[in-house]
Image 1 (cartoon, rainbow, N blue to C red):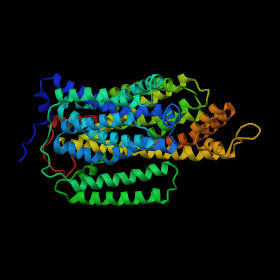
Image 2 (image 1 turned 180 degrees about the horizontal axis):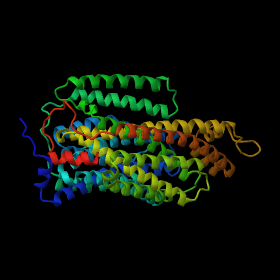
Image 3 (image 1 turned 60 degrees about the horizontal axis):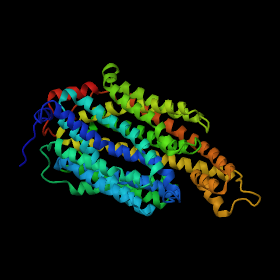
Image 4 (image 1 turned 180 degrees about the vertical axis):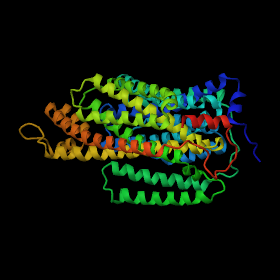
Length: 540
């Protein structure tokens, strides 16, 4: 029989005085940054990976799978990561996630082809799925109640730090080293994080479940994996009713339905579904799903815009992205005060409105848009996302007992990752479809005899392929034609991104109206101190 843990605030206080929670927070924020660092680095490296001379010569479909394999495994195994953190403790799960992430990063750095890199990225996704719920669980359990909201704000701001460091570091590495350096750089960071976790983060295991719900974990992994796989295939241009999309969606949905039914009757559920009976938790999940869907779709086409029609190098594009990172950090830090002044509901609404306005601004972008204008919109976008993430996360976690912090963190993370996958799939489908349509009607320059058939097909496949072909054949007119087609595709994608953001705004205003409290019927277990619940409710 396991011994009940002390309340989070008491455990934190006894772990070494007031300075100990701060040290723990620094360590978990650094570990959390790895996820955002890797994602933002990849956005800068996509054009290099597509280059047959400097990279792997990856096709557009292969590039999407380099990104999507990570997302597929990340989203598919997040519930498992949260359950493992609750069962074995967040410290052990954090160490396992860091180790797997570091080993997979080293393997990806020395990949000899796109397929190898896709496999390495998949294992990096599993490592991240172990890492992310564990970090938020550590924050919730180790921070005294009166400082928990601020700690969650700092945890949320880690995404901004990762977004800031990733593109700049990636651009610098690509300018001086081979493409694999953007993955190899993770290894020393992982080593430092492992040493810090061992030295600073204490055991924070709650009462725990005596039996791990292996059947539920398997169903959640296979179900989420099937759904995300279908979404990714749709984003790669497959027909929505074709076997590559419809079958995995139906099979994944059926497995998730069995998972949900089993969780209702399980004595030791991986995910207590009664959390969703709490309006704040349910509405917060939907808001995060939608806003991250819009954000991921926007970042997908924005990265190609900066290095395509706008003509920036990877290093310069990374430098511009610092504006978004600074905005995220400042917005995250401003959100607790704004929530006390305006309420969490209207703080989140203001953040969503700000990001939606920046998406609309891209409808006027072209190849000559001043960089200062781009940077200003990125800053506003980042600030808006900072206002959204912290209040919604605090509201959701206030509905979760500390003993289920891993499971609650997993839901928070799953909504972000599934939303991101949906956003990339939607943006990718729109970009690909509109680009091909515009290029099909455009005359392609190629001298008196025109382009060879295989080169013409390459140019009509993607703007990156067309620009590479234009450079090799010295046909600047071909690059200009591809840029015009890409801009039309970007306008179509940004229109639907803005629509998504406004839908999220409606859900926020309608759904985020009640203060968070423990859902009726949720097993008591080890409850948080009254001060902790009040602290969360103030933010919510």
